[in-house]
Length: 544
Ligand code: ACM
Ligand code: ZN
Image (cartoon, rainbow, N blue to C red; front, side, top):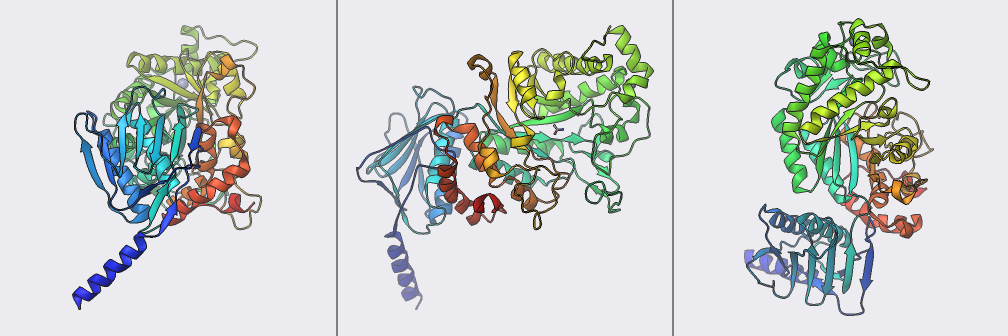
């Protein structure tokens, strides 16, 4: 009986594997150049081998594993991996991953397919990873047991922008390590290479700092949370969470395998209430302060006149750069009221000793913020790192080497590019994924406000209004996800999917080939992956 069942299963499997399903290289984001021929396709079945040339860090073997995993998700086939030795070619009926120094872009790749095999070449393992993402999205999401027909031809691809980011605020609401990893997987699926991890804010400090244990003992916990949009009513439920340094390192490693850089953000001089609740001596008034239970911009900020407070910021950053190897460290700089500094003897003394002067456009206190940013920039530059700051850092004297993150529209980004600073575009009117995505709000979860539908995201042109010379300073684009009104992983998914798909095409693809209708057609197959993987995507942009 057992034998009969076994044979029946084998016959069923054989029958299934005869089903042939075509792949299409026209994925999201659209590759730069796709050239197809009339020749017979490559038949990707369970006998196909993934052959790879290894590298010193093992990134190519990890790439091969990713490809095998993706093929398994789509087809159920478990392919054999084979490391190529010396000049070995990989044989026939294989997908061959090799490095090729002649590919012009570090993240670019060339995919060539014919009936004999598929060859994926790139200058670096990063490029191979993006070729694998294209292969993965070319296949149908669910074709269990099927043979996939990869069209004969070539894909030559590279990203438009070097910085392709998504931000995640884990302060207003905290997300477990497992979900941060899932979020990183979403970035990889959308060819993004940077996670901007917003780790400190008024409502919670989320990263262990060994020298200042109260930051997490006290600063990671709030006693209650306001209900709705600062209704005045509170849930009276303690809320908190933080990542140990070991956990943060685990996230860095997880992201690295997926060729994603994690940029930590430590907010200063504003959005500091959680830190001040832990160490009130670093505020202008000395407190007491509370880890903030409501949303907004608050007057209590770090005391820039206090050398111990400046030392504290540097000590924190010293631990942060030990955890995060990113070239950039984000130091915030947004929404810092000058109210306390105007009254604080220490801050006023600093203004005098540093000879910070008001002029027609800027107050002496504006220049105190610039002093803070520039001093911290020097600290980080001396340690080989660069700063990113929100566009408020343009108010005063911009820290000389700062990269500016434009969020209040694109004006700050344009101004910064004109001044010769590098810029990341995250304009709220295109890139704030905490905003509503539909006008039909009845059944939508409460959001902060605004209106950024899918098509609006797609229409972003990060270099608009800039000369070619200025446009070179736009290093990329990013969407931000502030989580005042987003308390669960499922809700995060709902806010970012499918808007990430529209953004990734802005970040990656050639602007002259952009077509919203064409994007919408291609998006269907990406949404099949969301569906297969039980991701909680919004359908509003898909129906409108
Ligand atoms: C911001 O949205 N406050 C950068
Ligand atoms: Zn002060």
